[in-house]
Length: 392
Ligand SMILES: *[C@@H]1O[C@H](CO)[C@@H](O)[C@H](O)[C@H]1NC(C)=O
Ligand SMILES: *[C@@H]1O[C@H](CO)[C@@H](O)[C@H](O)[C@H]1NC(C)=O
Ligand SMILES: [Cu+2]
Image 1 (spheres, rainbow, N blue to C red):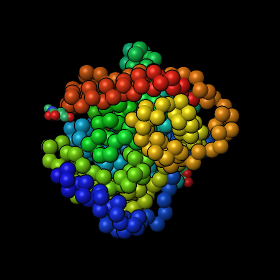
Image 2: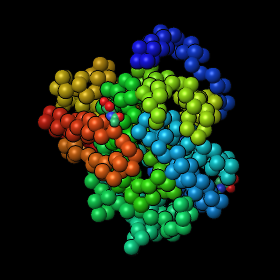
Image 3: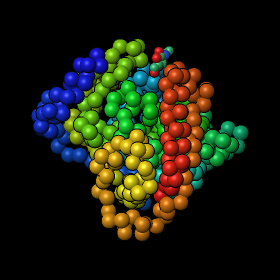
Image 4: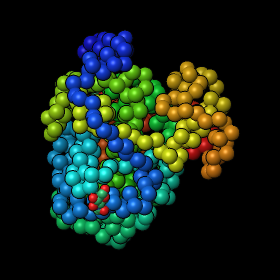
């Protein structure tokens, strides 16, 4: 199995870009492609249109439907290689329902790594956007676009959130660590647990309320979060010829391939692999607020401060090219240092980990969870002992 998938990968690499698309892609190219923006880059009128559509979707029962679907298929779409392709199709399905209400509806993403040091202080979690922590005995959210809503799945309840660590969640995962994963992992069997057991789990748990349940799509943060994870997968796919890399297993331990059907959707995994084809007619905008400066600045800082051995262990692509890692063009360093708010100030804090309850709820493999936790801790130790000061 391992051998045949690496032969396939080698065959793809040896073809021209067009040839490899033809070899793997069976869907037509999209006639037009829309862009998913970072939520904080929306204009007030775009946000008012999107939140208006979300209100209409709630009125018509779509939040309940997606919460039901996610809960129903829960065991088949987590803890195995269907995780990324299923959730890609799921968010796109949601987005296509939104487009019935407004042709210009798009599902934004949240660049959660930017807010990793103090997640509760994120702009996203204010009354201007999705609102903050719940209040009172039932943790009902009172502000933001879902403030005061009654959710109907699995039964009527106020829309709740319950931030971790008594309302002040400890740090999530740094953009440096996520970049390191994207650079180091070469198989889906590596990437999937490295993201699912780190950033994925910790955001669900630390937002809490319905986000920490099988019916987490009740909270629109679910869609912002999974759009971000999908964006990270796409970033991984578009580096190092990994577009068609799919390996590891399904929930029943059968081997996954490009021809395996997705849970519920019964469409081959192949059909969701490449954005811009078939039903996947979207792309991701780089975060215009910070992303360009952030990644470039991280890279400049990494290359400046890390000893070569440390750099090549944790950032093999950066070590190789000593330039843009993935999709970024590094601006002149004058631009980097002049960027407001980015100071080369701080070491990297240890990330929060998944709770025991969350691990059991998903029947995650404890050996794999521990490996991911240890890797994340070792990363922090390696960066801090090399004297790395993060610009984020
Ligand atoms: C959003 O904008 C579209 C036009 O692009 C309009 O048809 C739709 O009614 C608007 N929806 C809301 C809820 O404002
Ligand atoms: C958990 O994963 C490890 C390898 O990562 C594997 O050796 C082990 O058999 C798995 N355990 C279960 C119960 O599947
Ligand atoms: Cu999920």
